[in-house]
Image (tube, rainbow, N blue to C red; front, top):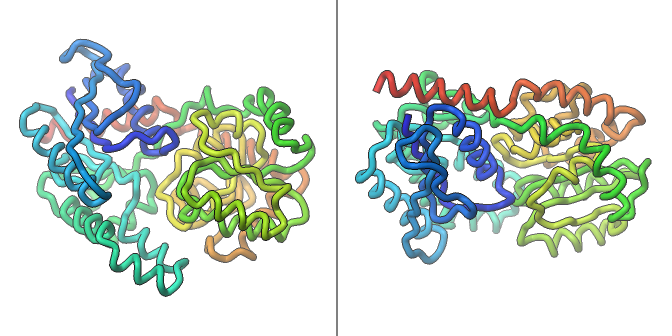
Amino acid sequence: MKIALVRQRYNPYGGAERFVERAMTALATRDVELTLLTRAWPGHKEAAEPGSSGARRVIRCDPFYLGRVWRDWSFARAVCATLESHSFDLVQSHERIACCDVYRAGDGVHRQWLANRGRAAGAWERIALALNPYHWYTLAAERRLFASPRLRAVICNSNMVKEELRRHFGLPESKLRVIYSGVDLALFHPDLRLTWRAQKRAELGIGDTSLVFLFVGSGFRRKGLPQLLRALSSLRDGHLVVVGADKELPQLRRAAEELNLADRVHFAGGQEDVKPWYGMADCFALPTLYDPFPNAALEAMASGLPLVTSLQCGAAELIESGVEGYVCRDPLDVVELARCLSLAAAPGQAQRMGAAARRRVEPFGLEAMAQQLTQLYAGLIRTK
């Protein structure tokens, strides 16, 4: 089975990249020959002779560009041209290109993201969003993709995304497949607490008995960090550790200082290895404005952390409030968010919910994901 995977850019902190890495690792043990089409993917070279079982190689599609619109447009053209000269059983894209058989909607629905962002934006920002040529291009690419006669299946990483695709584009049920991302249940495990809790807390000057909320991700505004800071300021106790890189870091650092949170909010920057941070925390907080299903949420739950998130996050599908965490209806409602954080901070609550969170994600290991993907691929190839 020869499968091409398309992902344009490598971001060491990106959830989509971690999905591709995990999918490639999991599928390599099966009768699947994988080829990655990308601008650049550090560390990946051909792992076996082409045509052999488990082979994995990289084809670079890296045309010159200036700006985001030209970047995405030129990459799409280069990939489609490359595919014309290669033979694959299936092409699975993680980018909005119309020359694929399978599209994984890991980035969600851009139209829905703009609607959610508009709710949180001021008047001038809404005007800027409406006039931004990158959003014009992305919306047009989305329409072309879902209208493409070549498209045979869309992998949705949550039921939330599946319903958005049905609502916005009228895609039939037969094309929509919900396959949750896989998580390495051995690497991300509650035992991380034993290894890292004392060390990482000592590095940050946080006591062992203090409750620590953890935020992991880039795109701070989209993932609700400004609201999280304001909600934390209404709690007497508790620390927040922020792991991730973002251009708005200086502004949010100042916001934390203005809210008198300088001693309780710790900005750790981007981290290629996030396991120690899961080990030192008590609760994972991600009150996102829009997130199809963040890998970090699965990793945190597998590590024994309860999740506080919003209905605009696909991971909310796995949470029963008060059992594995808490789900806020509106991520812009700081009062409701503060209430959810306060409930999670109750004595003994985080540890109890964290154990339930681990149990909840145990069906979503890498092997389960690989099995679902190969079943999908085999079915599509049989009916090709």
